[in-house]
Structure formats: structure tokens, C-alpha cells
Length: 135
Image 1 (cartoon, one colour):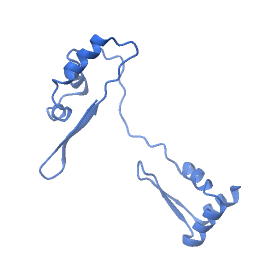
Image 2 (spheres, rainbow, N blue to C red):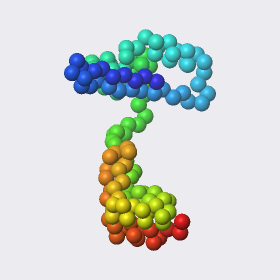
Image 3 (cartoon, rainbow, N blue to C red):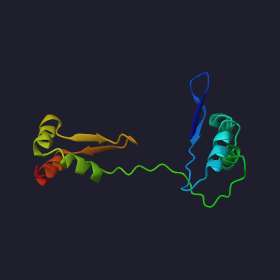
Image 4 (spheres, rainbow, N blue to C red):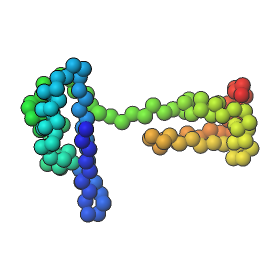
């Protein structure tokens, strides 16, 4: 595994990235030694990114040979959060806790810790959740 970050003097990020090498079952000791030896000679990943190398070129640099790319897929950010997931979490709090939220604020705001999406639950929604729970 390799990770790196190059920081500008003004503390902005110049280059950042990483890679992980996962051995397949049955990889022989000679191949493992070759990869470890190669990794000890490779420039830091952030330097390779700063130079403008593509992921394929970085892979070639890390492995020391041109790999056969079997498949590629675009990288995208996806957070599976939803209001329904937060409803389930609120239901798990139980009637008393939900009633306390209704009495204290008259609403509730839940924030996903992964993507920072905010979900607002009105008094009516909280009352509906309170009435659904058996705890």
C-alpha cells in the first residue's frame, strides 16, 4: 500500500493519492519478493501524481512491467444514506427518546457523517415514528 499528499506552502493540496496491492491466493514467494523489491524503489505516489502519470502509468511504475488491464470502471462518490435509513435509526431510540425530541425541539435534524447530507424531521414525522415504535 502507498499513500501520499504533497502540500503547497499555503497548505492547499498539490497532489494526493494512493494504491493498494492485494495478492491473489497462491501467489508464489518469488513474485511477492519481486513486488516488495520494486516497491522499495518507486517514487512516492504523490510525486507520480504530480508528474501527471495516469493510473495505468502508475501501475506500470509500481509493478515494473506493463500490466494487462482486464476491466476498468469509473470512480464515483456514492453515499447510501437516505431519510429512510435515519428513520430506522430514530425508531431504534424508542418512544421516550423520540418524545423528548418532540418536546425539546419540535423537530430533529440528522446529518450523515459520510456525505454531510442533512435530513429534517418535522414534529409530525417524529410523532409518526414515535407511534410506530414498540420500544
